[in-house]
Length: 171
Image (cartoon, rainbow, N blue to C red; front, side, top):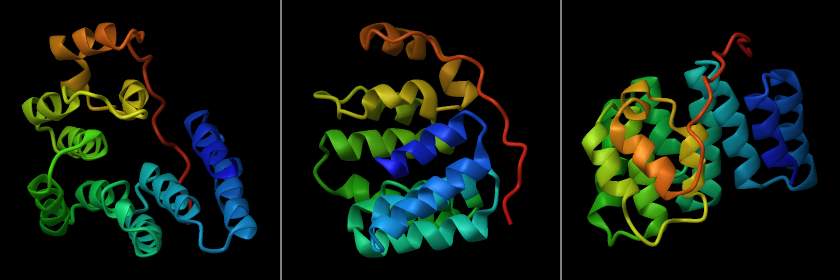
């Protein structure tokens, strides 16, 4: 799908192409939450937090699950810690399932809570997206923890390569 293509392009450093693909997904379907999420994510990777939060909020307004997949992490990354933690606590107060465990693991990794990351990423059965932790969790504290290598072995995944640093700032 074109929105996921935006993610791949951004990870490859093709920022303008990624932005165009995310926009294209919204031309195909005007109220496509994943398209708004991708625009938010691309902006977040460039530390354009005001723009990223606008897109994450739009995605969450269209599909409440995007409060956890996008908005929560975007708020934490942007320094909107109180609101981000409020969403985290809301998610944590509900019964844990494979999706919520993955979202919580990701959020805890983003705030350097390594033990909580491993607590939630250990949930079984794992969500279908769980193998994404190999490239989505870029926190060196998590990646350098011996439990991360164990997790990669458990999931039959190689250790991640060094990630590129965002260099292009979208306005």
